[in-house]
Length: 416
Image (cartoon, rainbow, N blue to C red; front, side, top):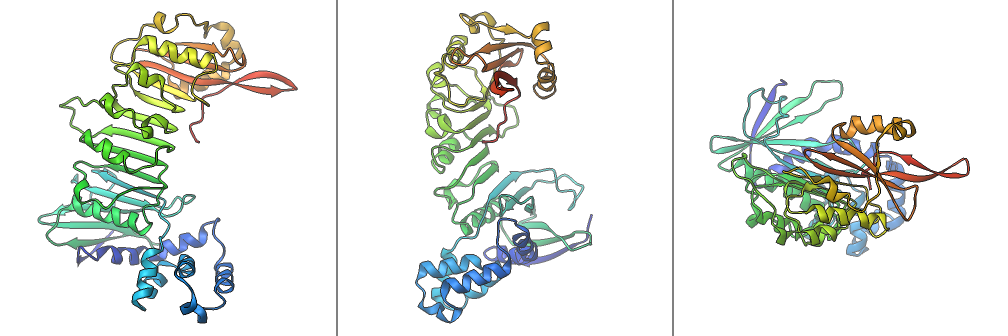
């Protein structure tokens, strides 16, 4: 483990010290970002835009905010102490924050200690195309909170750094810091992942996440689902919900929560625990990818779901449905009135490469069938029956090869 330097800090201001520590990495990342102009281009565009910095006081607030967007974090801080009006302009101009994660007891903290201890890890990322994540680990130290992070140096081993916040709870301070990061970006982040017990919603400053595209939440209270759904747009790319518990109590997502448009219309929907979708709710879903333990969905409803797709009335651009089940599904009921093609020797010869890929990715257990669309005979579904449930994949797609239509089999891509 690297040596650790430690200081005491005021809980109300410590995040500024940490940003200063990350400053060199942040600015280097900005320069390496291929989607940003070079510093010379940025400076030239900026001076042309405002007619020279001598005209700063003549600019209206909107123009000043455009200027501040070009400034690095350190320059923003310096401008913010020039005057009250400049301070307000800096506060009104968001920094770019792409993603934030808040994770209880992440085990990946060996840089700080090989011992097992309770933590909340906060990770954040500024730019969508970057692989650089900034990470802080919060833990309790008696009545105080300890925050640890790594300071990276060129061609040197990372240096572990630490702050002590006096008389406060580490979980509360971790959430406060994460929400401050979001606030600096005016809550316009695209990805948020939260896996935290007893999330302090009463003290939260999150009102709405207008640009959120992906939300994954680990919760210990069903009521939190409603709270989080109220804070995201109605249609996002990914919504994932799972319970954090010790396994002593079986938690189920009740059907009255499942009509929310954020649930029915997200492109990808996943529940890590049983969700009591009724047959009607299940058949009204619009998600391209679905994954949940379908404890209340009947075999008749699944039969209707497949028939809707066969007749061209199913989910537009459907990709997959992973329908877990406690009890074994009735194959005869699900396939009633549906023409199927088993994965026999003939299909093996036609699609041997696809079958090998499928087995390596989706598993080779259970019985598999292809089901052809009546709208386009070159389009088909794969149905995989197993003891754990039913898995449906839109695997057969029409292509043109040598001027003739044919089917290409592949496992659906889930990047939208």
